[in-house]
Amino acid sequence: MIPKSKPNLILLAGPAGCGKTQHSIEAFQQEIGTRYAAGQVLERNGTEPVPAVPGTGIRDPLSDDLLLILPTAEHRTRTMDLILRRDLGGFFQRRITTFDRALREFLKLGGIEFATDVTRRIVLKEILMSNEFLYFKDAVAQPGFLDLLGKMIVELKEYLISPQEFKRRLSSLQERFPEFELKYADLEKIYEAYETE
Image (tube, rainbow, N blue to C red; front, side, top):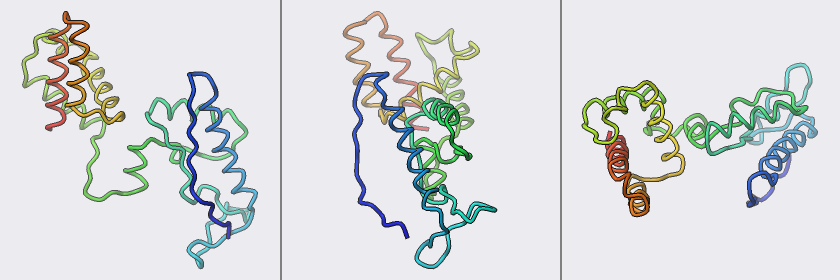
């Protein structure tokens, strides 16, 4: 058995381009290498063997809870690309994930429903069709507007910004840019209606 180390937290802080992503990828790669280097079929829960990589007798290094969790789907796609450029053998689609995907796929939180892209689109389309907007009245029928709103909702959700917080932040923007008052009001209305649904 590999002794379990105590959990630790490393905070990487710095401007864009200083190497945070590279450091994280190297740590992920090193962990995979460490697990391969262990080399033997180990015991899971004391009795059950960890599955071996077929034909090698080496346990699958990804059979445990090894995850690289990223904030957004865009970060995930970029990191997948960077990792596949390295000399890493394997398929990491499920192991390089986002918080939403990890909650849904690995923790199997019962009774908690997550809005899929299709669900989000249906809800937003219904909101746009059943409400009147002042700033976006012409944009509602334009191709692509629904997709932009969907991306906005995803960003707000992933950064845990509630409708109340969103309204507060838009209020401060309105003081600086009062000419967009109608725009801010429409965005508030859309997000509040989405959250209600």
